[in-house]
Length: 90
Image (tube, rainbow, N blue to C red; front, top):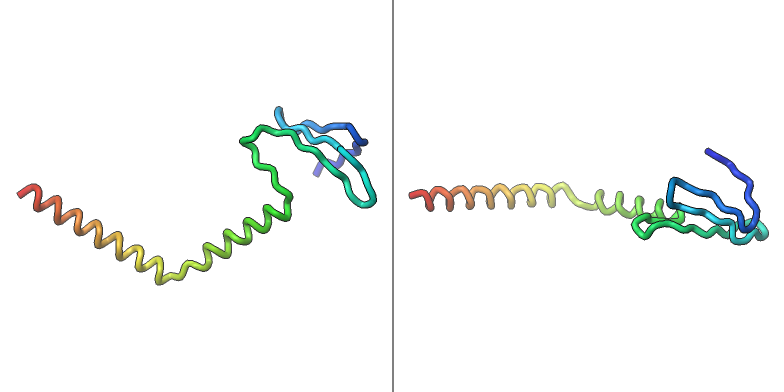
């Protein structure tokens, strides 16, 4: 981890197109400004962690029976398509 000391108004360049500015320093907190292209997602880390946790919980909530049902559905669909293809050839 790189640790830097910056004063209000000073900036840090991340890569070629992300600029982090120290906006304000208060009691126990620092306000930062981030300038970056719109294509770059900027999240507070605790928000990122929550999103990851929710995604993991959602992936776990899919029951194995749901997966089996989906597999059965697609197998039946493939068989129907094969039968239709054979009928079209005749």
